[in-house]
Image (cartoon, rainbow, N blue to C red):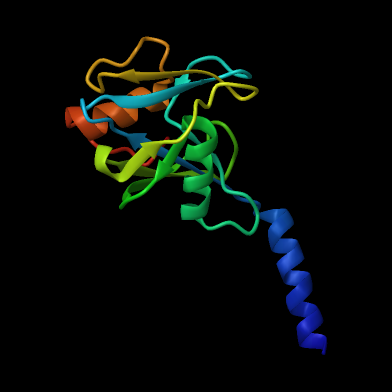
Length: 153
């Protein structure tokens, strides 16, 4: 009984002392080799689609949900894990899990533009638009341009 209480108190302290946030994003390719970028209504720049992992969700469930919400995409095939990145500039102890989804592993189910997404864009991964976020540009250079993989988002 005391050990159970001690364990519960330790878990509560650990959550307060070391909170961690986790997000998912994806490099989604179409049949022409272009990649999907999204523009949010609440922040400037173009991003790889994705978002936060909600309490009780697995990373894969979150990936599927976020791509439906932000990209209007239903994942129908395999996804490949590219890496896990630290995003400490935004929030201490934030991490992003990045996946790759080939053209054969998804299909469009709806237009995602609305309250959260103002625009979607398919672009050449070798020359993304200038207003793609620095992290988006880094990931594309690493994946397509042979740049060294960084641990930082």
